Image (tube, rainbow, N blue to C red; front, side):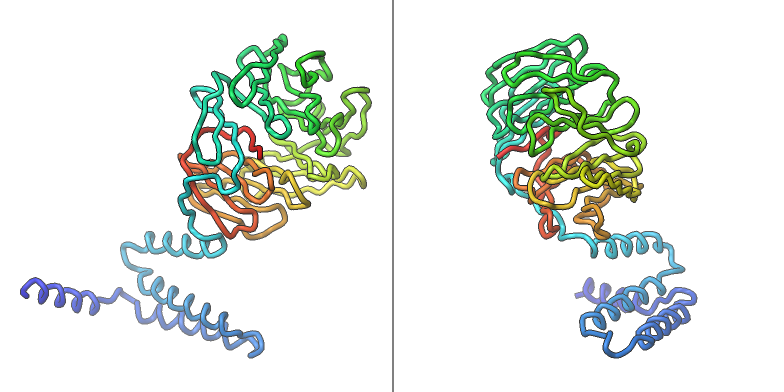
Length: 373
């Protein structure tokens, strides 16, 4: 009983304490909130907005009262987090399986592994990078000297050894060709491992990309900073970007219909329309970590950006992010159906649904290399 009496007395004492100037600050905030509200016409005051205004007013009163107290920085941080989270989806929840199913190729310190929908990892071998062939029948993998094609069970089907270390392998949508980089060269090999040949020299270190609707059409960033599109069988140039790519570009992505190409630089993006030759430039809201079109549909490309201690995932042209939190996001991998995307977040995988209505986390299994049905 004595302890309860002491606690009650302490609560009463704390409630009676006031910060210097608290009453004046609270009154100023109250007047501003009421003035802003009454200035609007009655028709523009739906009930939900009235409730939101009152809630904001209550928060501002608390902050104003605490504005001269010692823990004002902590309250300010809390308020920023609350306000910013209101524009993002619900808090990430843990999940024990990939929400979109399928299989992921991931790279880690021990090599490349295959992760199924149940999150069970199967090691393929001591490889550096990997890329799925159409429908996931094979995976193109690299070592320090060799490009190989292996089955999901890890069986090697073929290998080629260029003069320089291979990297960034990419399959054509029909599976009959595979493009990759070696040194400053762009090379193309037939899907059965034959006819490995130099296609272009002096290219930028950005992964090439086959046109989703044409297995012979390949896009890459040339040494002069322009995007080029060519037929890899006939070696015929089909298109050249009218402007150079943004500075320090790191990603090139086709739209699913093959009509547009997105190039992401460190601080900006360029969207090229191949039919009209129109170029749309968009500044980033922070450092662009990754960007890419979804593999299906006519959806907008997604961006992963980082600024200060916060990261965001958003769709190009949309003001509100799908998710925004503290910490670092790394990479961007779309699910095969284009409804989910995956990025790494401080030791875990963050999976975000494209409509922003659901966000789940799973244990980090490595750096995603490709997602197949």
